[in-house]
Image (tube, rainbow, N blue to C red; front, side, top):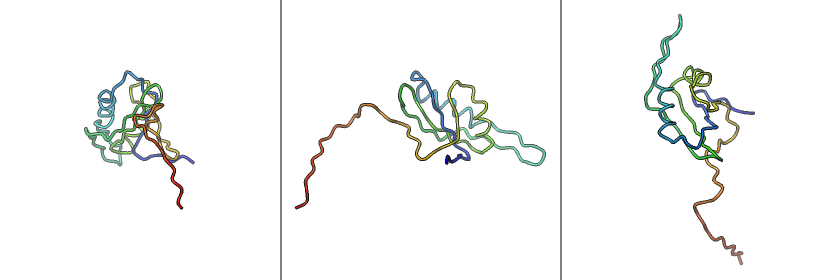
Length: 114
């Protein structure tokens, strides 16, 4: 069963021409918004220092954005101003980078215990 995050959204289908600074700008816009409270709730202040992750995935990028409150997260899920796919359901571990070719090469030797 998937776990729904209370304040973090996963962002997928970010085109390959988008760089980390552009992703961070979108994250900052979503986190810095101060939300007005209703009749019985106080306003929710924004935060201009979002916690993000950003990685190459397949033919584009994927990332996460941690928002200041559940209300900020709900708003980001429905109105983020991009064509990217936002969700808040995490099943197991969210892989942010799955490179086809490794940058690291190594030799593996098996030595049996005698």
